[in-house]
Length: 253
Ligand code: AP5
Image (cartoon, rainbow, N blue to C red; front, side, top):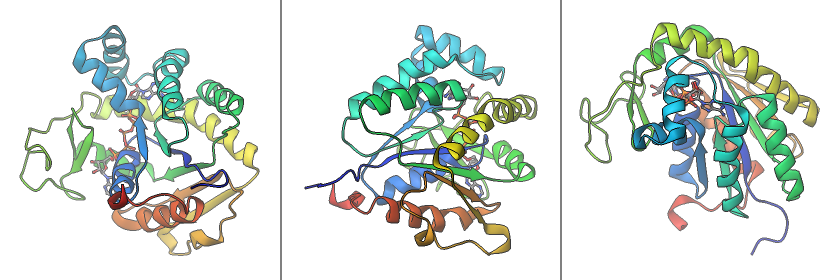
């Protein structure tokens, strides 16, 4: 039984293609918690041709962002249903407005965010990743021809169904998505940096990364900087382990 507030309430933030979905999926293989991916929720609406889906289809193709209130209604409601369960949000909030709405809801429940991890990946490597990305749209599972290729070319590892390219994974739309990250998401990151008053940088390129165990349990904001394959993962898993020691392992669920 849990005696104190040790619930995982965490955001994973990063520019398009920084690896948010990849790292969340990898964490899910180790721990028992829920992931809500804003992009996957919108793509599911597009596939089901709902009203929101029709709107999202146009916005995503253009590399724009859905309105704050629509996203809050979609994801905020899901977060509420998770109650005391452990959760991680990928891709929401993405603007200062969304962050303020989420904070307000969580503060009202006396369950504020406990960790924000920013995947800080240089721009020159992410375009290449995006162009090499293949996606299993129904599940949101992603592959990359060089980093994590599917076992059978062109097929999802779990279902064997065909993989596809996302419509927003092209040079032109990627440029717009990156612009909106700088204009809309960086102010949100600043909000969380100020809120916690502390940023931890892990620079994988110089191999001078601090051990995650040296991060204080009070720190809200963690910045992970990495440019290649397996540099982010060991730090991320160590941080999650030390911040949320009561998290059950996936096999024990
Ligand atoms: P969303 O799906 O969230 O897109 P995104 O933020 O642009 O992020 P991506 O899904 O492109 O990348 P990722 O960081 O998950 O990277 P991945 O793990 O796939 O949102 C799509 C759109 O929906 C938005 O543009 C917007 O229009 C709308 N939207 C969503 N949320 C919204 C919100 N809150 N408000 C308003 N609008 C919203 O990795 C990328 C590739 O790199 C993969 O091929 C992967 O295999 C590879 N890779 C990953 N890690 C590594 C590594 N360490 N080394 C080498 N390759 C790697």
